Length: 461
Image (cartoon, rainbow, N blue to C red):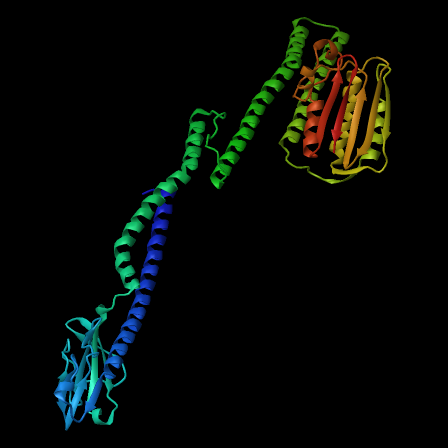
């Protein structure tokens, strides 16, 4: 039988409540027994001691001098005077006057009990009830043969704790039941987000709808945080899934043209006999398309590896000032259309990063500036420090972009319009790689561009 988390929590909570109440009840019962015994013993001793002071011996008395309520009993050669303050029964305590032989002289005992040790409270069971018995020897010379014996039933003195024990026997089971039901309901309320997560996960699994999310009321407890984490995970999964779909679509689109060209050229070549030079020309065309396909595959694999990374593979202290000068000098050799490349690097600026990736980042930015720069234009690469931020800037005075384009330039395979890109054989992956390298270095990239006035790419490390 499958036991739910809600049931397990309720069972554990119920068991804990029962144990706690059992311990509390046991403690109250033990304390009550102790307090009851102490209270009964003190009360018994007090009554008996007070009554002892009310017994006197007299040789003779005059009947007209007897005070109302006093009792005179013949004893020895005189009389026992029992004052009216002598109380045979008070608060459940019975006091009996006996001689040393156990014969009752005055009072009525609640039970038949022999004399016990003097000055010590003892217990006696009669018909299933416990009695406390206390004996004291009268000390006056004429009274030394007499003993006061006190009796009290243990139930005669009810304490507050005793009433609590009785009340707890009625209340505790009800409280335990209420606690169990309340715990079950609360567990259901607390675990509702988990049930919603389970239902959402099952619906995603059944329908492959990665856009589904867990909708919860506002809250900041652990389960709400778990739900938020689940939603963020689903966001990433959806993005990854859509990315894979887009990747497949993009690479299929990019490969379709060279594959079609190769097939068409091969069919055309096989239609008729050709001269050696014509065959070589056809093969060169097929070779160019094959190399273009190889370039596409290599760039896509490189980009895919970057996209899957969460951290840099090798991190080191990179002298960014030296790197900017080195890459700029190399890229100056690839200048085209009369474009002038210059650079300004503040010396001694270093960051934690990956040298190979940073070289590719700078190379892609400069190549992009050459590609969309105007004839005989300029490119300026700058490296400087503002407060605690190292800033890298690649600025050109080329064709520029409008706001709609700047929002898309970091997407895979995005290129400017066909007129501007038809001559440069760009795959549209350069800036996408730049964005991924910036992400891996925990940096930020910003684009400032104006149509027909140029663009500036700023990276803040």
